[in-house]
Amino acid sequence: MAAAVARFILPALLACLACNAVVLGQTRYDYFYLEAEKCRLAGDYSSAMELYSHCLDISPMSASAMYNLGILNTYLRQDSVGVGLIRQACERDSANPWYLETLASIYLSKRDADNAITVLEKMARLQTRRSDVLSQLASMYKGKGETDKAIEALDRIELLEGKNVQISMEKHALYMSKGDKDAAFRELQSLCEEYPHDMNYEVMMANQYQAAGDSAKASEIYDRVRRKDPRNVNLHLSRLAYYKDNGMAEPYGRLRDSLLYDPSTGSELKGALLRTIIDEAQGDSTKQALVVQTFDSLLAKPQEDVSLLTLKVAYQIYSKAGEDQVAETMHRILDVEPGNQVAMAHLLQYHAKRNDYHSLEEICRQGFNYYPEEPLYAYYLGITLVQQGKDTEAIEALRNGLQARSDETNAKTVSDIFAVLGDLYHKQDLYEQAFAAYDSALVYHEDNISCLNNYAYYLSLRAERLDDAESMSYRTIRAEPDNITYLDTYAWILFVKGNFNAARIYINKVANPERGDDELLADPMLMGNLLEHAGDIHAMCGDMDSAMRFWQLAKSRKDGTCTPVLEKKIRKRKYLRK
Image 1 (cartoon, rainbow, N blue to C red):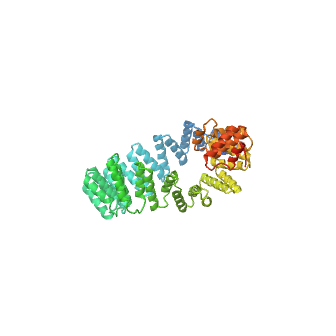
Image 2: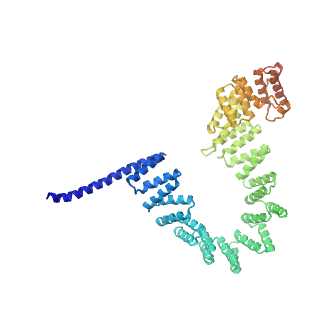
Image 3: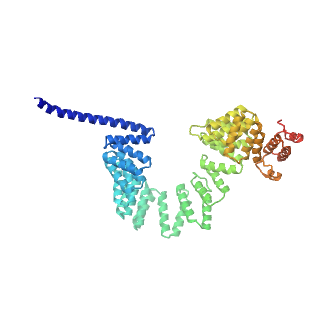
């Protein structure tokens, strides 16, 4: 009896132990897999790889550990190992489309068409509604010259998504490439039936018949299109192409000119016709003159849109017609379309180059009126008003620009607006507001060099926060070591701090004493105040001869930048603050 019981109990006990071992192994696997995932997400790829490898020791058939280990190997540029592991993961879990998608993308990136196609075909079988996979397959079949397979893939996309113009045109081209003209015509015919109100497909059909030598059938379709859509652009271009290809110069020119100068012809067709004239004029000065005459004739009348004017600008730029002519056309574009930003941007540069502040002001105001959410126009307007001495209006314009800013506004633009506001506030002796504006400018762009220079210089004039001023000024000369304005500021701050010898080192880079007087005065960047600073620094270094020389040069500048005590310093032969 005991032996019989043992025969039943022992197998049950062994089965139970085996079951517990499996559960224990799965528990250990899950623990190490989760730890691996934590390391991977934390960016500790080395530890993650060790843990995934340990997972494979526990469960050698685990596709997920194998896949993730493969991904990490590709991250670490161990491509052959990584691809091998991902491929094994796809074999272990053959129904996982995400593994296959990763493998396909790797093969595609390596331009391994054969392996990529094999994987994509598996994906297409697993996910039958993935039109993006079918599209990729069609493209790759086409590249390998497997036209029938490419057409089959496109047919499957059409079953999923319905009739699609792009797909039909691709199929048409594929049929033509394999010489199956009947199938190609059927594809176009299906487009005509699907979109009966779009005559462009009818024109394409006629063009194909014409190319195939069936002029009668082509003329029949052309006539049908002309009755239904007499202004169809492609119809007229097809007729012109036919005349040109067959050397029929007279009917070609007659049709082209009649269409060009017909008031009922739309700007789209006129533009297309003008492009043909421009193409024909390449390298022929006589025909180039005809292009200009044609533009002048067509644009002599008021324009409903800017398409022809835009084409004229492109031709003027291409033919190097001159900046003035381009600007004139750009102004006409603004007359027709006042909010055209391309024309405004061009004209801003054009008038700024000529210091035409009146025109600049008009364009900036127009830009800000049409695009109040764009502070850049307010910034340019503020600069333009400053140049005209309209400081109060400039402050208002710049404030309006700041009110219009949003999270998407370019930070450098906001910084520049605050910086100019700071300059204007300082000019009005509103020092606290000026320095607050500079602080805001540097919040938006900490490396705003011109702001750093002005901020530092104005602090030195008030002998405030000189250490901060020196630090800011030093950043400017590090950025632009040859900028004499920034060098002068740094030298002046050192001077105010009493470091006269160091100040002289930097001011000598601005106004080198070894240069002759005529050479110094010939330098347009050496303003009177810079020369006066040189004199002040040399005076405090005990070199009165050099000081007098630079003070006299500053006086001769007569540019209004020197201090009121310059004459007194010269008379007394000594430095005076006031």
